[in-house]
Image (cartoon, rainbow, N blue to C red):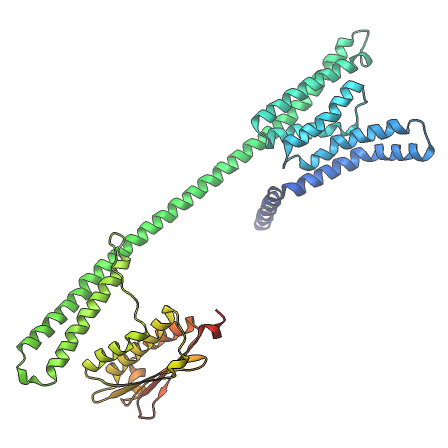
Length: 420
């Protein structure tokens, strides 16, 4: 039975919080609303009286217009009470001095003085806040002295002076304390926001340190496992190559290709793991580009796979970004790796690089065991190729080659076709 009232209370609190946040985020709007309300309720009677005096030709019309001007001069500065409190108070001081010097009657807009005192205490510098309080207290005392003769009781003018002064000072004190409390809340909110910001930065720093430590841990583990295995492969391949008789035939090139591939992989792995180590400077090397494709094909041929490479349309070849050339290189590398893994013995591959008018097309086909071998162990190569090509607006098509193997066709549009 109590769930509905609790829920309603929570919704009301959330609405109230949102309302106060809206007010804090729009100080000019709040000032305009308050000033307009004060101006309407306090200035409208003086406006009506002045208008009637002018229409009827009353001799009091100039005086009524002067009082209306005093009213406006007191209330209009409230439009800037929070954004420019010192300037608003300085403007409001002028009509107050005129009232004291020329003995002008107190108007309803005098309530704006209390509002501006609170604004000085809440939003102005400390010197302006205390200066405004001192001026208000002195002004109340002077006004009490001026009016005490008219409010005396029983021939004792000082009674009216004391009553007027105490009442005026009380109102000014309440207004100043209200504004000072507002300042205290603002300072407290700013301190809490700063503390929350510092805590968040500290938490982010701790997360980054933890992530760096975890990366270093992963790098150490991978180095201990993979590097050790690759080192054994290099050692065993070199040992077998040196121990093999000269008449070993194709065994020697195969062993040499195994050792060289393992050395290259070990170097690449160490360079990659260096990125994950926060306490080491990782060695870097240029990313492979289209110009390194012949060297890649030579390495594949040394592994025992016959590869035929053709290229066409070189006159259409534009200047591609490094990332796009790396994508072309990786597509050929991954495709030939799949041929080595799945095509079977005696297979050969054909690589064609065609530079068209709008895009470059890479085709890799073989005469191996076909799609059945690829589907049996697809791995992540094809998915990775598609992701790389998609970054540059390209596409990938995989199917059966005319020779019965697998055909991979990758297209990569030039930059001008991508609109970059």
